Image (cartoon, rainbow, N blue to C red; front, side):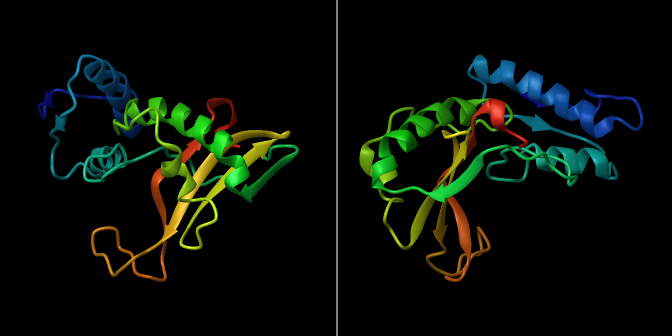
Length: 179
């Protein structure tokens, strides 16, 4: 899909929000039709559109979600802990649920819905990788997988002292996001 430089316009003061809303809607429809390559052009001096497009994933590998820098609410009876082998079934269920989230606009990261147990087990009990589970009122509502950088890597700006979000990624159930 190609959106020419004159193919989008918005009211001053709302430019970033409008482009984000329009692109999220349009890209979702395009992906539903099998179109996965998108190109948006804009004027070089348009810093707002450039920053918005960058945050939507143009120029990034994967972009997940954004929120303001303001305070977030707190969830009553919440906790986070590192997952163990005893959590494999919970981790697998959240991982399968996350595949639909990652496929949706504006992320478009195609993942297998079903993974072998070994895919998730490599985070459980491994000192070089970890998977953290978030709980709200005793129910698992999300996860984050991390690993230590394996080498000096200019692509992801990491070294052996850097922790990275790993390929399994981050996922929070919809009703628990922003909390």
